[in-house]
Amino acid sequence: MILIYRMISKISNTASLEEIESHLQSKFDYGQLYTPKAIINGRKEATVCLVTNDAPHHIQYGIWGLLPEGYTDSWKSFQAIYNTLEIECESLSPRTWPYDALKYRRCLILATGFFTGEVVNKSMQSYYTSLRNNKIFCFAGIYNVLEDGFLSCGILSHSNKTPEAQLKHSQPVLIAQHNYAYYLSGHDVLELILNGTFELDPKEQVKQRVVDVNTTFYDEFNTYF
Image (tube, rainbow, N blue to C red):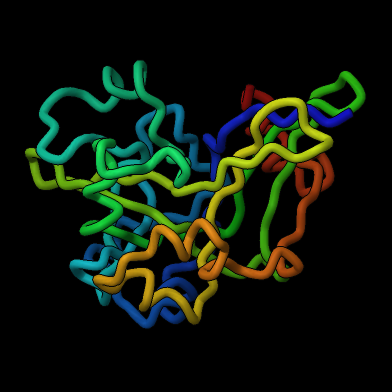
């Protein structure tokens, strides 16, 4: 039995600045601030690299965890009640507050991997998913602009219940590189996201147990749950 129950709260971005700029054909606004990170912990206030539809040729930084447009209170107080590190596409409708961001403020969130947790045969297993050769990829994201001008963002995911899983399984949306520009365009993309049109081929993804990846991940990841 596999019990999948955990939303994504940790990702990895170990790419160099040069690799990121080459992959996106864009430049960092503040390249001197960029540092590769084996683990970006979304449970603490953390920043990620992103490209927005408003500035597609600029690589910027955003706070991971979507906050309402113009929000003035702390990230911590909001995330204590609403976990918006990951936002399920199936939950979005014109009546929900993140829907406006999906329509008008889409972004690509840079990463080289992400972490998930599963209960397998009554034991917790932690997994790391990346692309072959540890290539850069982008999550489908949405963002808002805060009162102070900073960006906050969330990763879009699919809600899915598989036959072997007793609980809901959230799968992040990884955008295929040739679809970056269309995703950032002004077109309506929700239906295309839901039917998987934009996504990377799952065969390009490699899923490994964290303990089998490397000691850096494993040592930091002991506090994942």
